[in-house]
Length: 356
Image 1 (cartoon, rainbow, N blue to C red):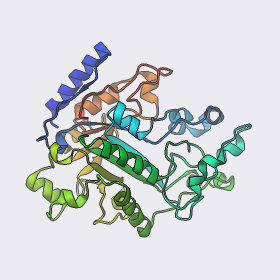
Image 2: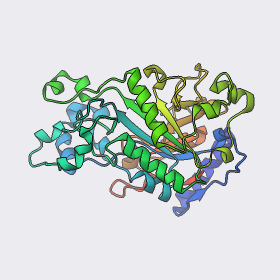
Image 3: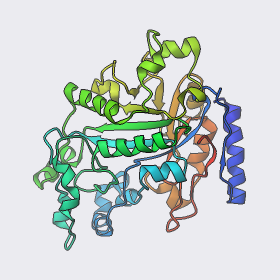
Image 4: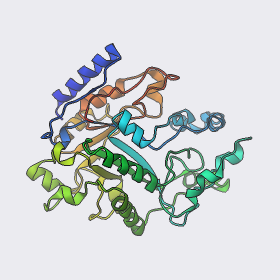
């Protein structure tokens, strides 16, 4: 998207602020190249809001934790994936995935040991005892989730995709987590907070297999590359696929995949850097700081950015970050507020100018 397109989207966004009753999907032609679309995405799409007792307990230590770890930034949650996609036209999702090859690593939630009267129904967490990839935000603390396992989330997404074959492509951001509170603090580790389990090459192959097994509408690197030497070579030679080619499809994109050693012949894409010939997706989460750079990058790459973070914009009813994201032309704009939280403010990212 060029700068004029960003200005156009910002103008119709301003119309929303004035009218407060608009929800306008952009009518993108099926001949539109993929990097000229804009999709609305949810951040930590699996997450549920922590229990009130958990937030109250953590708030007692907010000054010691510092601003970046303020527990109020955990006070958000999301609807199930199918509901996000159907009711709010979300076309970008994010899953935090923890490795658990033996099973049971994340079955216990250590913070509950310190909160008087807080009990959980362990029966509902039994799937965590089985080997496999688990989904949660912060082990032992912020563990409430719509999906305990990666397979559960992929199955629901695939079911929705098959039932809605004309949907715009869905960009599934996968973040393999390699650190937790147990890694960051010896004291917490002594108190029973667990370390994250690193990813081996074998684990990454199992992750790749999960995509192939559970996402029948997956659009793979190999389809994209079309026999060219690299993904970038394909884009430079014949441009991006057009919307009509990828309707009803899912793109899996692994955050930090290159540094982890995700196999080059895997089915998923990676978020990487502009020097990597097999990278066509980039992350620039601070649109105000990188606005001009993002505008330039979107000519050749698809860029993901964030409209808000840590409940801060919602609490302050602050649209400056969203404004920067829109003006930058970033194609994937992630938010925790596709629906508003009236206990904070009227802040919401309107569905204006996005494809569905």
